[in-house]
Image 1 (cartoon, helix red, strand yellow):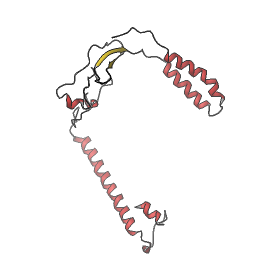
Image 2: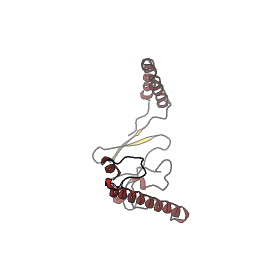
Image 3: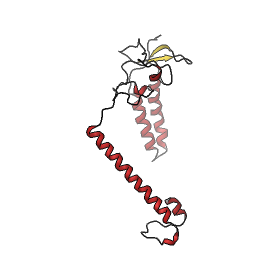
Image 4: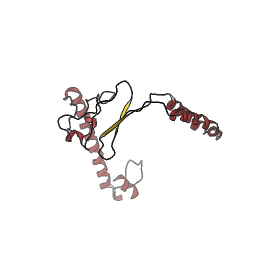
Length: 181
């Protein structure tokens, strides 16, 4: 309503208005809306305080949600899942009522990911991922310096491009790894 009042010519930052201007109803609606906001905020603050003092502790999936983020403990561990769940539907927690099937056979001493079939999403093979490297960090620093320096001179792009290319080449260069099937 305050936008409509402004479109009807009501000026801002004036503490009183003549009654014959026709803004009374719109100002009353705005005041009632602001009062409703205050009351709802106070109810929210009361709920936060009451819940913090003596509320029930929520379980792992208090809403019986259907997606994977609710399949782990709450709060989740840093690695999310001890064993990767095998998903067969859009609502895996509702489709698999008892326990989620898990993928087995992955190594614990190196990084591996499961490759699935395209249409059925069935586990097809596993692939080793490269070990952690410093090159993504180096590339990010170089590109950041190029962007900041290009504010001051366009030559920064020309001088920084070889360094960025070197960092990206080292990052994307194929590493020798054994093939997994």
